[in-house]
Length: 189
Image (cartoon, rainbow, N blue to C red; front, side, top):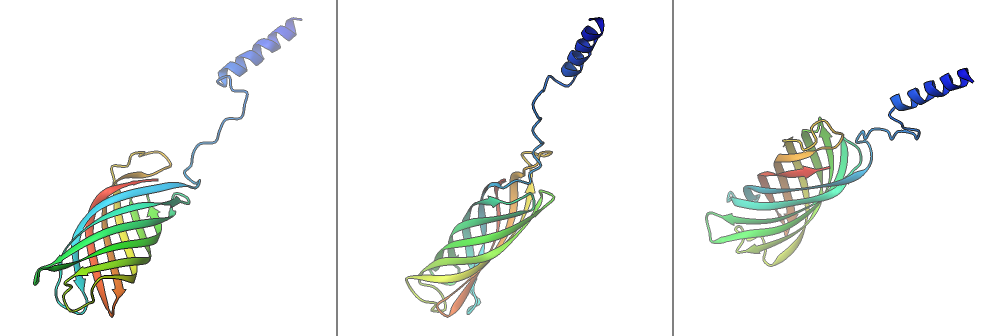
């Protein structure tokens, strides 16, 4: 009887020292699972039609939603409404860029993304005679972003404020437009 009591006391002490957990502990979140990714940016830069030496200031809003596959790779859709004005004449271009981007994130700080885009481009007195009305266009999009102010510094997931550099050529109506912007925003994944 005495041995049984000592064994029960030892078992109870062992159970209490392990935190009382009888069930299997959940594994730590390593950030390797698939999850939702989102982001936004407010960008300024310039747009230049390639057939002329005219360029003008540009403003865009980048809105991103997609899937974070693991801590390194993601795929997302970026919508970028854009407005551009040209210095030489009272005219400009607006665009709605719709890009699908493959993204590589290194050290939760550096992002590199690229992919194709389906764009709608509208003009109001476009310089160089690049058309009129609304034109569908094929485009390409490239993005580099620096993440800082990480919301989950030591956690498996990333996000924070971003400083981004975007380049986007659109090809339509026998010409191409090149838009280059620098922006501030945020990312969550």
